[in-house]
Amino acid sequence: RSPGRLECALGWTFVVVSPFAASALAEWSAQGFEVALVALFSVVSFAEALAPAERLREGRIAVLLGLAFWTRMDAVLSCAPAALLVLWKLRASRRAIRFIGVLVAIATVLLVSRKLYYGDWLPNTYYLKIAGWPLAKRLSYGFFQNRVALYYYLFVGLPFVAIAWRSLPV
Image 1: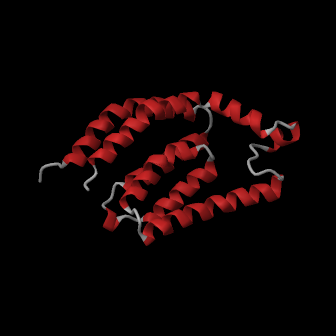
Image 2: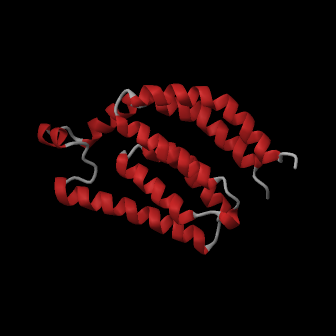
Image 3: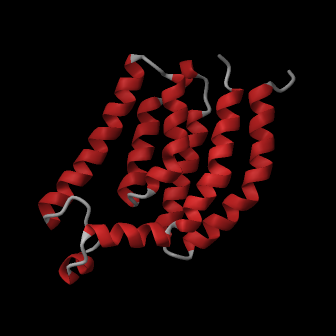
């Protein structure tokens, strides 16, 4: 069987994106093991999301994405392509609602438990809390600290999603 449009587009995109992804992963991994774990969850969930809609295991993908979110909340960036692909394939169906429900339930448990324990919806660490570093300042610093990742998703990730999205069958 000859490869279809989707396989060709994904293959070429993988060849182009892989070196950038490997260098970004090496840089992120140097910051701590949890970044590599988030990358692993992201890649596995995206690989699962490539399955045809009728064989898609949306519950499993939602759990993988939820675990990535539990590992690091900025996993929303690296997991967005998998989530968008699942939502595209399951548009307007009960399965899409189940996918969203599982993902929201996992995120809600994390946020509520953080609120109950730290007294803050988005605490970063115990040390930041006792130092009194407010959320607004943490967010601006977080954007500065993650600028490499944000540029990567803007210039590599979004084109990859656009090519993959365009290659999907109607």
